[in-house]
Image 1 (cartoon, rainbow, N blue to C red):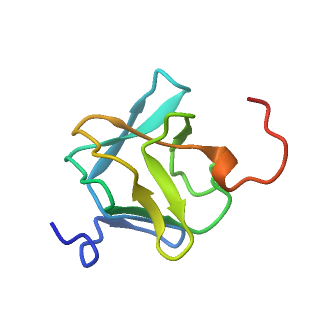
Image 2 (cartoon, rainbow, N blue to C red; image 1 turned 30 degrees about the vertical axis):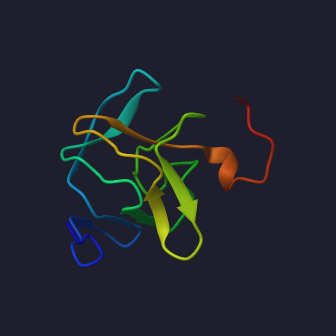
Image 3 (spheres, rainbow, N blue to C red; image 1 turned 90 degrees about the vertical axis):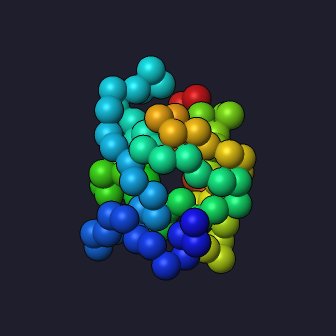
Length: 102
């Protein structure tokens, strides 16, 4: 799938390139889960706004074993294969420069 041309969900702050849903998370509150497999290296998400404060309703939780990484040229890219139904996670320490409580 060439996801560079397929935008699934778009608002002024968030663009998802794959189908996802928000469901209860074992990590924290609610999380974002993929409804389809995502290949390593694929562009998954573009976000404008403060992700940590969830002002964009991204619902992407922090995890040190994250499956998407920040790519300054493109956005958030899968750092490994992400299976259908898996929670999408990012390591907040990749892009937040302030001290975090975890």
